[in-house]
Amino acid sequence: MIRTVLVALAAAVFVPQAAAETVSVRMLDRVKQADANDDGVVSWAEFAAYRRIQFKRMDRDDGYVTQRDIDAIRMFLPRELEPDRMIANFDADGDGRISPDELADGPSPAFAVADSNGDRVVTAAEFKTAEAALNKKSVR
Ligand SMILES: [Ca+2]
Ligand SMILES: [Ca+2]
Ligand SMILES: [Ca+2]
Image 1 (cartoon, rainbow, N blue to C red):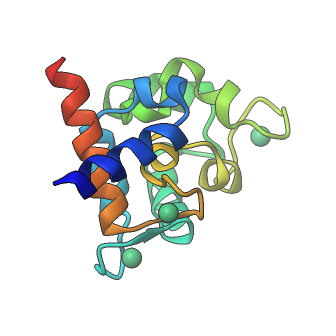
Image 2 (image 1 turned 60 degrees about the vertical axis):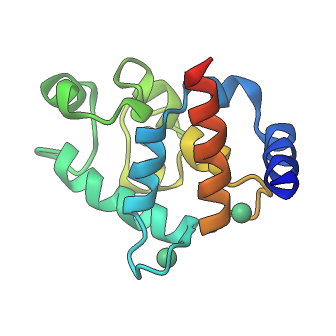
């Protein structure tokens, strides 16, 4: 019991507060879906591969996700992708559209919050800790 509390406290220290506030348990579940080899651990490589699959669903025409794509599928986009700020958040080279690489390597508040030690791998224990912290938050 004491150990659980300590782990939760440690996580709270490492989680950037601004990011943590936008993350929900549902968003963590989406990160979990990226666990392609089903070992309970999600590496950034798995997450990036998952996003490349998402990309194919978002881009309807030219190999890039543009504002037109976003507007067309807005209601189906995961909240974490922030449709209103998606181009701003992901367009690393500033050409006004999102390439598959830009989406795959782009920011993920949910992944960052779950990955409490910042090693770009979310372990089963890290998922548990993050879920417990988020559940506690929503009770308040
Ligand atoms: Ca895995
Ligand atoms: Ca771009
Ligand atoms: Ca980690």
